[in-house]
Length: 397
Image (cartoon, rainbow, N blue to C red; front, side, top):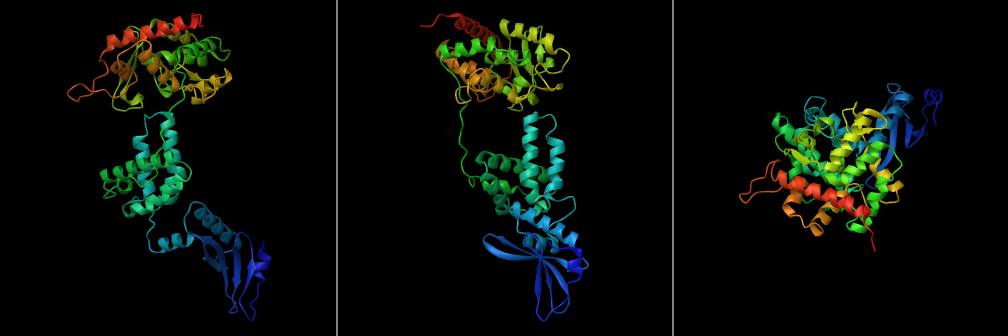
């Protein structure tokens, strides 16, 4: 590596020559006496050279900082020479019309009230994938092919995340249209451009005998009362794991013996949800109130009552009890209930779909509201809870 003394003492010779520093950077000493900072690199299989400045206007420390920026661009799949060219032409703006400025505005206005997992995932996609490559570009100049190049980079890591990134970018562009910063959404032109998502089914135990063994294992779980009670409730309620973990005491209507979720608290936004409580479920909540009644959350985190139980809490408990994720998952309890209530208890499918909070429409094509078939669903969940008690004590052959 070069020192300041070596750079200062570099004298011209009959021919141009180089003083090598590190990571492709060097000082080019011209026979005229001028000294130039340069960086050699490869991009898309081609050898290229980037000008980093002229010495002494750009010193050794500044040149190395520019080297770091250029290598960061390369790691993000951006050619630093092209980036510099765009900056010179004014294609990269610092005003309020850049992709990043619109994305940050969208983030403030649209992520409020969403689940913690949704917020974390959205911010990660913005901060790690979209903004590093598109952030400084004027949002109205981003073409579909440019967005596709960014999504391809995500796709090489995860097809599912690439689809999420396209959807998120589309939300930012559509918000940009609404506030007059962009004319159209280029993500629309990329439908079908990414690899198809592979649908993963959550492993679940769907036979009564092994499921009874799982229930017994939960009853004998030696972990915290909060995790144990969450695991005892999840088979009865048919909620998604996140909806159960983030349940608040304000969701519990003790008088009507039911849970009441607003439309913003459900994964499927725009549709509130009511979950009737079987007597057994009601009793578990009463017991849990002794452990977490001072928290807003029914199942607070062990790290602090101000946040809910983590998504790893119940999953780790299942692993501790010997139920690998390839056998049964927390989300799999929904599948277990759906299957056995259909095949064993012969519950009408439309009631199960209502309880799973799936979209169910009437003969005229209108979505049923949250109170639809409430009494029937209450009887259904009570029968299901009674059945779970029954199979735990059954003598299996």
